[in-house]
Length: 229
Image (cartoon, rainbow, N blue to C red):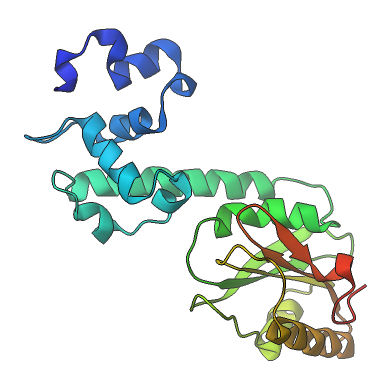
C-alpha cells in the first residue's frame, strides 16, 4: 500500500507533525527520512527493509555503510545519503552534549557515557585518548587507531607526543571490545602497564584505561590493574 493511500493520521510525516516524533516507531521515523517509496515499495516498507538488514538494531543501522543500503532495491544514493546524514547529525549532537559538560572526568562511568556514542555498535576496535587538564576537565579527545576486530595496538610514543603537544596533565585511554566482553586481554594489560610507566617518566598521569562495550565497561583504575590506582 502506498503511503498516500493511508489516512492522514497514519502517514508518518503527517503523524510526526501532528503528534510529535516520539509517537513514531523506528520504521516510521526512517520512512520520513526516505521521504518517498519506490515503484514496488512504500517508504515504510523500504524503512523496514533497512531495519531488517540491521537486525532491527539502530546501533547497526547507525554504523552501516552506504554500499549496504544501496543494495536494497528502491534505496538510491539520495535516500542513503539522507539517512547517513541524519545519523551523523545525531552522533555529533551526542558528542556536543559531552563536550559542553563542565563536570570533571573523574569516574569510569562518566568516561563510558561520554564515549558510548562513538563506540556503540561498531564491529572493529578503536582506541582513543582523553586529554585532561589539572582540574580533570576534558581538553580534547583523539582517536589513535581503528582496525581489526580482535586487537588494538597502543603506540606509547604517539600517546605521549599528543598529550605533551596539548599541554595535558592526565590521560585516559579508551578502547572498545566488539565481542561484548569488557575484560582486558593480557596484551591490553601489558601495553597499559608500559604506557603507565612511560607517562610517569614524562610527568604525566595515566588516570585510567576504560574498555567499553555496548552495555558495560571495565576500568583499570577501579580494578587496580597494571599499576593504575
